Length: 122
Image (cartoon, rainbow, N blue to C red; front, side, top):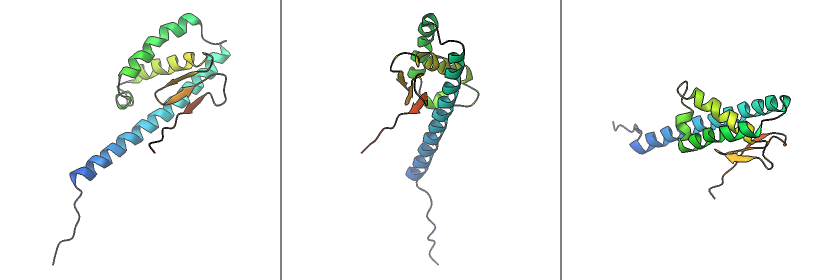
């Protein structure tokens, strides 16, 4: 009898791994959107961020954009970096017109305050 079992090729294994990484990145972006939205609400209750705070936090955003998103999403290892990123994007969302970063548009004056940007490959 002929064995017709189809073993996964290296290419399909790589594709599944890439798909898993993409799922983790999407989950991380959803987490960021939620955390930033909550921080924006807190800042609104406090009267908004000061200019000095926003200037100080921009360095956190520069550091985050230099790191690959998959590294930021690793559980437990990047919690301080994620907190700084959330704080920076929430503060900068008060800039007129908001801010686009890491696939998110953050604008405190809109509802919802954080939206995910869509990219089409067509």
